[in-house]
Every structure is written in C-alpha cells, then in structure tokens.
Length: 267
Figure: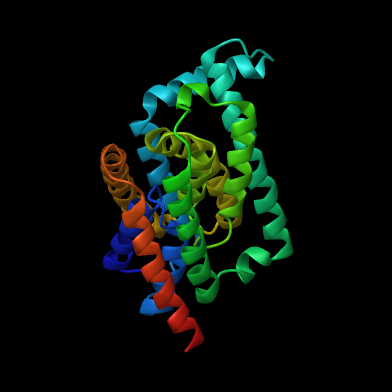
C-alpha cells in the first residue's frame, strides 16, 4: 500500500472517529468510491490505536480517575468517584460488545457494509441528532452521570454497529435526549469510546495475529501516528466549538453525504 493511501486512511479515521459523522462509514466508502486498495484489518487496528491514544491524552484527568477507580472496582468496592465512573463505563460498554459479537458470528456485520445502508444511516441518524440537540433538555452534567443513563447510552452505542450511524453521533444523541449539555454529552461519548475502541481493536487483532510481518510495521507506524495527530486535532476543535456552535453543521454534512450515497446506490 502506498504512503498516500496510508495517510489518507489515517486522516479519515482520525478526523471522523470523534466527530458525529461515522468513521467506519467513511472507511468503508473509501475503496468503494475511489477504487483504492482496501486497507485491511491490520491497518484498521493501527488506526484505532492512534485514535485511542488521542482520546486518552485529551481526557487524561478523567482516564486517570477511572483507572484508579478500576482497581477498587476489581476489589468489589464502588466507594470513590473514580470507581463509580469505571462502573458506568463498564455498564455502557457491555451492550456494544454483546451485539458486536453476535453480528460477527452471524455474518451480519459484513452484510451491512453497503453504500445504501450507510446512506440511509447517515440521513436517519443525522436527523435524530438534530432533533435531540434542538429539543433535548439541559439539566445534567458529567458529574451527575448515573448507572441508568450509562446503560441507556450503552444501548444506543450498540446501534452504531450499523455502518454510517456514527458511534460518537448516536451516543451524543442519547446524551442530549437524556438532558446532558452539548459539551457534557460529547465528553461522556468520548469517555465511552475508550473501552469500546479497546474492545474493537482487540477483536480485530484476533483476526490479524500472525498476518502482520516486519514489512507491515512501517505501514502500521505511519497510520497510528497520523491517525493520532488527526484525531487529537479534530477532538480539540470539536470540544472548543461546542461551547458556541451546535451540531447542525455535522447534521447538514451527514444529510448531504447520505443523499449522494443513496443516489449512487440506486442509480
């Protein structure tokens, strides 16, 4: 795979992973619409590792708190703020792991990787994001995140296994529907992405163990590094813009892209 292809994949993954526009949908579309070589699962894992490093760095204070809480949670204690946060993240992650496993063993995950599916998901869940953002109450913050809300957001996160839905988009939608502010809904969404990305990368790694040789190390390094840089930049800009801008620009982009994809799919 050429360096240009690797950089393009890394930039797309990095920029779209945390924006509510579906990174997986864009990566599936890349070879379909451009004729470029499919990147394969080794590169997918590398891109996920890069974006994981970006979100961990950006939210390091929360991550450090959750890591410390995880140690207490393992001992059966939920007596600190960090332990409760770790428990919420665990509960929010269970649905996507269960549904993802079922989709993989049934083969439905591959069956949904079509342009029409992505197009419809872009439009439908884009409209849902707009509705939730415009009508959702503003009465909760990250500090008031509950186990009940964590589970509800986790159920919505599982819906993101439909290509084109957007993991960040659907969890932010759920957060706004539950009454969290834009920035807090986005913050919770990003924190939820950490265990989800780890689980996704681990699952992909099971399929690629032994397939990556020394010649692939260069490609892996390029993709991981560039996806990290792109994801950190995109995440930083989005979190800053949310203080003054709604999710409407992302919704407009989703609907426009969805219409184009449906036109391509049905003509």
